[in-house]
Image: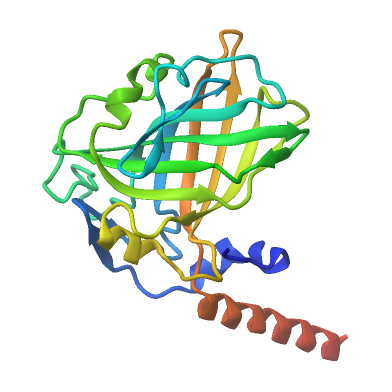
Length: 259
């Protein structure tokens, strides 16, 4: 299992500002800019989520949302947090007129995702042993916006080719209840499934988390969220972060000498 030192983790986004100049990365129909100080986030997402007691399905070696698991239940311990969504941006600043991450051009693809298996076991306590998040590339545009009825289009969120599959390594909800709050999480890519180029591009190895995810959401009285948005960023390479951490230590030592 990949590991990450918590004290160093707080430096991850800051360390990204020391990365090299932006370069383009292409994998599975998507082209994106590597993160830099000016453009640190890889992607913006919108989604709808809910708690469920329904069973998940399985397709292509990964878990899936089904008719049963698209049915919401009241947020409660023992229920599984699930959802569907789409990528609205993917470091697509290369074209200032028609921003797109689709390698084929503007309006030629859709990048969607589904997730589940995040089981609430207590206040900000989660069983992540069967958690998952799958990203799909689709040449069509049938999922549409991640609005209040997105849960009804769980099939459209999962009918593309599997681009990459992830598991949640951490999940932290900054809230006093399960209905709403701010989430931060680290994810690891699952090797052996999805697009091989995407796996290689996003995989930092066995001792490093691959993605950092933040989001905010609120679940309504009907059991489904509205206006849920998040951002996904790459966790910097260990060497980059180590250099940055050493720089902080050097600044601390210099400050002590001056004092």
